[in-house]
Image 1 (spheres, rainbow over the protein chains, first blue to last red):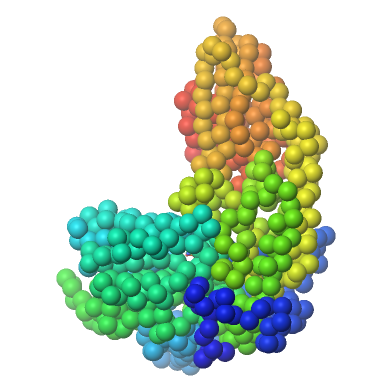
Image 2 (image 1 turned 90 degrees about the vertical axis):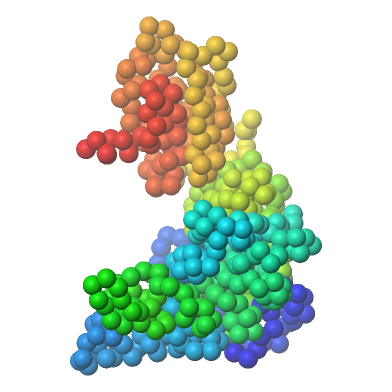
Length: 434
Length: 132
Ligand SMILES: Cc1ncc(COP(=O)(O)O)c(C=O)c1O
């Protein structure tokens, strides 16, 4: 799987083989679903889980890996001089290696464990941002950012006086890059942008933007929360300075996330949180710090979660990211086709093949909460709300939308149920209303 | 239980007391920024009694049905009595259990009413809990 890197960039997606006659082995969806206990639960209604962009389901192998830690070698790491602590330390560090390899990091020390994407981005904004930004500098973001890649930069801007600037999007939901030269200048110190929009699914041409940012001397942080789970992200090929992502969106557990950084930057950066594990030696008034990554990992980490995330990465490798991407494209094409049949529907964002995993829409005259509520009555779990992306909602002039998002375990017939649920909502809620 | 009971859909489709008053004694409007629901309530009050009222706004079935039911409930009642209404009264009127997100929808109208009449700005239920 690693070594095949054709699709992370928007520009290259049209060349990707047609999903319907793709030369890869199609996923064996029933076998995959069998790996997820939650999808086999016997309920009145089978669970049709279309909210993986919020949190993905967890395969049994991940749960078992975490379970084994608690049942057989539960102990703190880097401290105990005894067997189970040594085992826990070894498994934790091996997890770092496997996760590093997953994004093709040069060395494991470039993988810093955090709680989630949000914490990873905050780490960079506080540590790197506070040390490197001052009044007159600029931070460039896009209007499609999740709040977790906006608020840390707003706060940094308020602390330092650096100015926040925005790349706009077109009505189709892709970045508007024709005036990039005006926005990206020598004043730009960092570009912080999402690889994939969590609302629209848009895949941004980050590789080109990273090169453009580097040409003016800016650093680039990529929010990979929605890309790393869905296609092969190679940090060396992208040449990003930082990459943030969350375990719970890629078949891993909650409570674990990753910050990848270039080694020279990580080494220069001051610590973020202070405490145990991040020190070399401590005096009363001052201390010296441990090397990267320990410098950024104060306190006892989420040990079983790191081990669980490594199991998730192994699982995704085994299934194959490329096959997952193609499967999602097939689901998306079908979803667009089915949902477009519905009268009075507005679908936001680009067409399939320029995006992954999500379809976002509204039905005329029906509140998104009600759509999600009626869909729940047929067993379909979707997200309704602003998706932590209020500037994007404002751009489309809506307060909320409904988002259905897909992952490796979703089936085409689940989209039929989604479609029927939406028709049911229309029958129920637009009968005689004013 | 299904939250889309006929009763709720009826109130949603044909809300009672929908509209505005020309000369309200009290008029107040608020929104729920999470989902954009917005409700305005106009009250006409004589000798401490709500003699007439209207509500208007937009929102989901739950927030609009709750507003409609609430206006039916309080018409002709003394303001002082209305002040005592709480979260559970709204849940009783709706007759369905609500999860944490939809609860805010259900309580929006009561929040507007209390804020308009008494300047109480918190979500109904939360202020009670703080007092405990
Ligand atoms: C694009 C994007 N960035 C950041 C986040 C935040 O992730 P977390 O809540 O795991 O920190 C999300 C999650 O919804 C996301 O979709």
